[in-house]
Image (tube, rainbow, N blue to C red):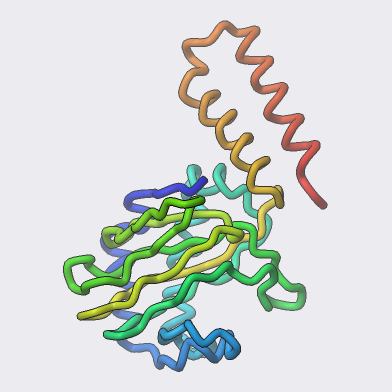
Length: 221
């Protein structure tokens, strides 16, 4: 299951990220994964203050987005990173690494996130391609739109044939490691939020009982 959130970043935040990306110093994206020969992108120098500022803007969006928090049930979130794809660049089909070097303790990547920053009309190709069994979903979001999906999902970035693709990416360690369990909890909580006022009070209480105790059962320390 994946989730698209429109206006995850405000227009002002998108502009701030674009300005930070304009000022930041970029390096070869393979420096973070030198063994993957299908990765062709540019990422900021981790020490660049402009890149860090952009990351804090996107991190703040996670903290205020109730929908995103309910979907991922976050324990830890890696600082979001700006990524640029120029003409001819892309990222072949892959599954994100199980663990990321974040701080003193590796972060387990349960949920991956792409936040679109550039105008989709400004580049050709560059779609985020998510493979769901024998089907594929191609996403080319508007500025400020976020897409969240299990890190276990096979996906790729289609080659950019013209222009430049500008996005942010991050990885989240969830309180619930299993994607199937997260999906069930998200569904239960969405039903509770949307239908609570219409439900019999006893049934509403029973739904709350099930959701909260499943969370308690499945959450890992």
